[in-house]
Length: 179
Image 1 (spheres, rainbow, N blue to C red):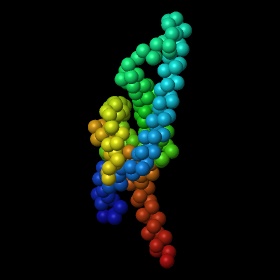
Image 2: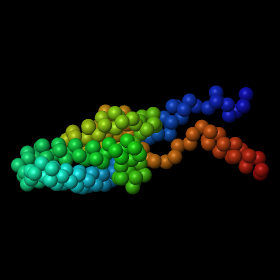
Image 3: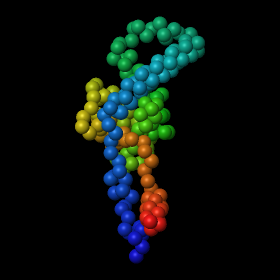
């Protein structure tokens, strides 16, 4: 039997589980700070655009009525725009927000796969919990939104697939035989 046969290799899920570990809390904190600032800016811009368009179409000055909105309602509206205009699109299509792009991290399922749309939405809805941002500041930086959705943030390094790992081992042994 060939020493590289599929029977002698690990099952794909076992292989991936051995490689995938959460990133550091420092990177998670950097992600949070960068993403919070950018998502807030984008949410405010989108809300201003909607207010201007609304005012032009409906002939009502919605922007001047913002002072009358309850602060909790204001926070919920801003949160809604942050997750719908920033977190969900970026994490669903690329697995990364801008903060994760800068820190070279990405969101994956516990199996190392790209999360589906429902998982991304669920993950981001948990962010509304007060103090949730501090939940990843532990020895194992997996936040409540990660645990609730079965995801984690990992360093974005290319994982070897079994074919490339096999080819590298063949090359290694071929070079070793030269000496």
